[in-house]
Amino acid sequence: MVQNRFTVLKRGYTAAQTRQWVDDVTDRFCSQLATIELSQASSTADMQEATLTYLIRNPGPGKVTVTSRAWESVDGARWLPASVTVPDDSEGHELDVHGVDGICATEDPLVLGLISATGADGEQQELTGPSDGLVNVCQ
Image (cartoon, rainbow, N blue to C red; front, side, top):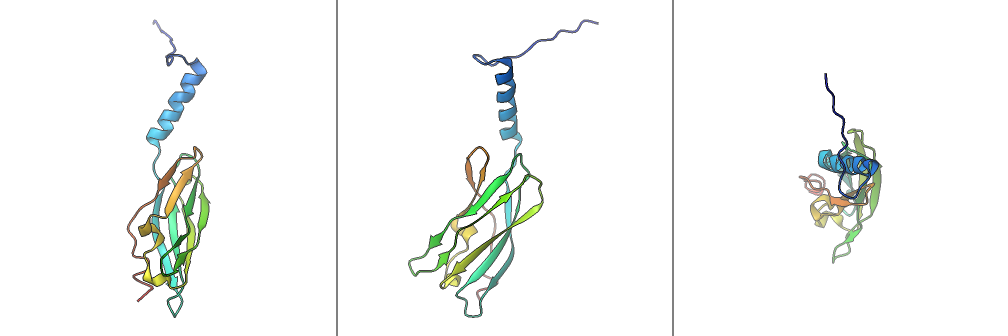
């Protein structure tokens, strides 16, 4: 039996650099985005404040930091900033986002596009999904 062994090299790269390049491309190609869904929502009796709890799952590879940016409406209602680091375990991890000063008159952070995930590579990706967060608590 004849067995040929050869190494494929990317032009201008060493064998180790080529292996790393292939690994990086494979990780990016095979990675899946973190997912987000609303799991719980509540508001105060006067509907001036609300708390939304989002459930985030990260299949990886690598942990991500999920951030909800601060936001303020022209009327002064505000979503406060929040973040959580989510490991690549595909388990559900919670992100609590608090809104104040008449927040029930606005959209929730997911609908507003305030929530994003940042991986170890520093690339940021907006997380989107269906949300009726304020409909159920601000009526």
